Amino acid sequence: MTLVSGPQAPPVQGEFSGVLIYTFGEYYLVQYALAAAGLAMLAGFLYAISSRNDVAPRYRAASNASALIQAVAFLAYAALFVSWQTSFTLDGDRYVPDGTSLFAGGLRYADWTVTVPLLAVELLSVCALAGGRMFRRRTAAMTAAFLMIFTGFLGAQVLDAGNRVLWLVVWGLISTVFFLVLYAVLGTAVAASRDELSTGAFTSLKRATIVLFSSFGAYPLIYLVQQYVSADSNLVAWALVTQLGYCTADVVAKVGFGAMIHKVAKLRTADDVRAGTETHPEEIWVSHVKQSEAWPPVAAALSGHGAHPAVVTTRPGNGHRTP
Image 1 (cartoon, helix red, strand yellow):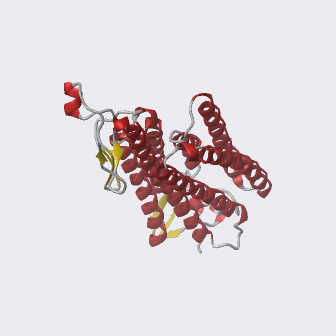
Image 2 (tube, rainbow, N blue to C red):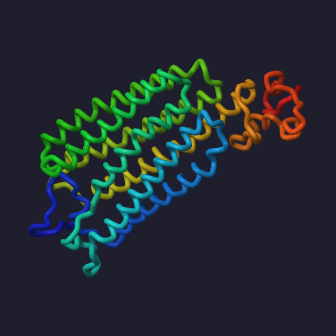
Image 3 (cartoon, rainbow, N blue to C red):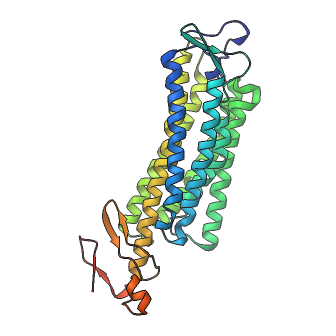
């Protein structure tokens, strides 16, 4: 491991990724991760926008939240990429801090301050909640999500620039309290939806929740890196773990989770169409399996005739309706 010497020497804790010397491979690995994550967010945003009409209006809040999440994340990653590019200069066969700017890793917290509360909204939008129950759960989840990120930010970036273990521990513990509250609010909302969702929709919702909760769990683990690295640690290796870990967790939590919630919204829309409580202008397909016919059919809608979907059944195993 090679460190910057003199006044540029990195602290034991704090945002140390921007004050190290990297080989070509190490530098380009982080650059690649930032670029790939940003492009994944852009692709996810375009998918969320283009597919929002695949679901019924009552579930489009999930699509809208997903689009906003990935748009904000794309902008954050674009800024992170530019910051990484402009914070180092090539010196021989190494990339060294240029001495005039520092990699702005704290931009991630600005991203999370907006996107984590919206992730809670996205999940709740496909749960079996409405009215006051939805409002209370959404308010509690968004508040807990915001405070979880903000208190972590105080310990990791603001107080003593994240260089004091005491603040890292204290604010890390406070952040963990809100982390557990967020899990409880979202987890109980999902569990309460079991009896009101079809088996397929609830199974997909449960899987999406597991993915979101698992990706959320990665962030405090990476936060601990900043707390426990020391002067004897391989800081370059830990910087790579931190940056690549955050990029991976972000893509899973925003792009992967968004695609899974979109599937839940489509399944719930198909369930509603089959139950006769919702209309949809196109057939609904999930994983190349038809979940419901278009309702009302175009020809029937134009003529004013056609059977109500409530008297149409689905033949087991083929996903097609038969009278």
